[in-house]
Image (tube, rainbow, N blue to C red; front, top):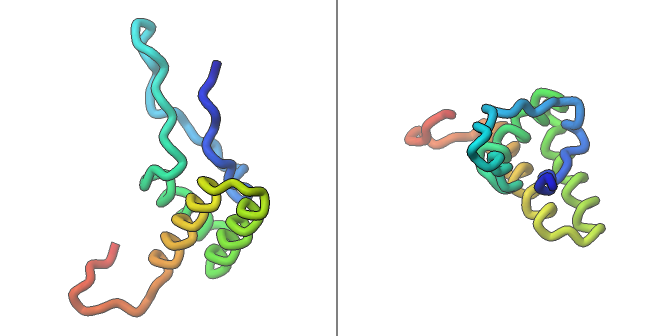
Length: 101
């Protein structure tokens, strides 16, 4: 039985996630990352910014609200992380001591 997939990203459905490697026959299948894995959150934020530009945070916010209406607390928290990451990626007012990513 396959492990459950992470929360689907409605606006990112066209993107195909490629596995990073094949499991050896003697090993168990690799575990999928948690939906709140920072790399996956950052990747989702980047994709939304590429697809929606300045509206990416609003798209993530609408998705979060839709998931919250369905009662999925983990999904809501994940989309809030994605929204915050988008806001950080698009932030232009930085302190002189801050590093630019």
